[in-house]
Amino acid sequence: MSQPVIWGAPPAERADAARNRVHLLAAARQMIAERGAARLTMDGLAERAGLGKGTVFRRFGTRAGIFQALLDDDEREFQQRVLSGPPPLGPGAAPLERLIAYGRARAVFMVSRRDIARAALDGSQPTPAGRRTPMSQVHIRMLLGQLSLGRADLDMLTIQLTAALDGPVLLYLSSGELADADEVEQRIGQAWQDLAERVCRP
Image (cartoon, rainbow, N blue to C red):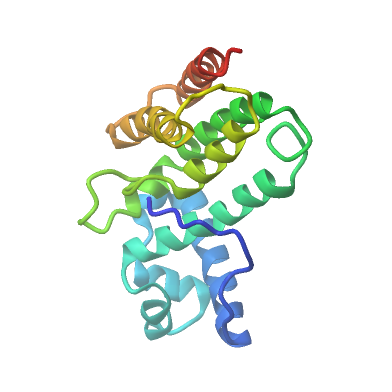
């Protein structure tokens, strides 16, 4: 899943294009809820939305593009929770508390969207999340900087913690089955908390 850093407002677009995007994403979500991600097609989406196929292709390019747009839309909402939502995920909690909350929330976010993440593959990405998650690295680095970690190399520590968070999530997302998603979320979240508490221990 390609996850851009979305720190500001979305790019400007014409009013009709913005309406079409919102309408198409809403229609796609309805179809996924009814039939599952595997049965969503470009033609089916155009028919459900009452728009021409050309409009759908111009907006998304490929079937994978539909799912990438859904993930980007969800990513915006997640990032807003991190930037301005209630603590401990949002501002107002101690840095370590926020770090733990971020990892737990990220695991839930990714695992709960695993079918969409798989469908977002365009054939050139080896895993559903594709590249590293830029927001994780930026956010983790900021929180580490607020902690008293002595002479620790915060940039390298950030890279290692980001990999420790993203790696297990990508492994589960890349697997064919998730027998118990709730258990996976809990295990990843607890492992993240254990790691963060040990790394950030005074």
